[in-house]
Image 1 (cartoon, rainbow, N blue to C red):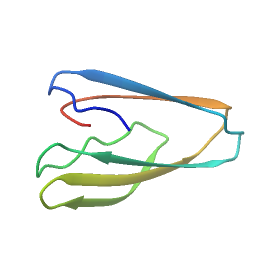
Image 2 (image 1 turned 60 degrees about the vertical axis):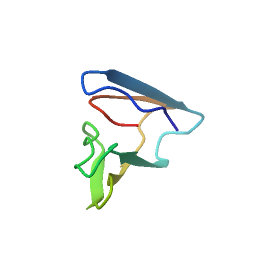
Image 3 (image 1 turned 30 degrees about the vertical axis):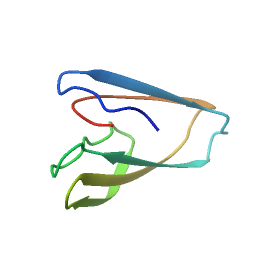
Image 4 (image 1 turned 135 degrees about the vertical axis):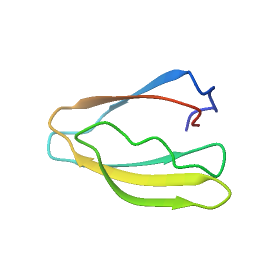
Length: 76
């Protein structure tokens, strides 16, 4: 869980403690009723919903024991 950020902010999150072949699931959200940021490849978006805020559910299978995700925008 990360705090909100400005529209020009760059954010990264490093995930550790998993093994190659594990399934990671991520939920991203926009601060408003807008589509949330898509995660970079090899993440796959499986659900996007927009009502009073935009939500995106994504997944990927890991190839290493840590992953860093980076994105830009007003997302928390």
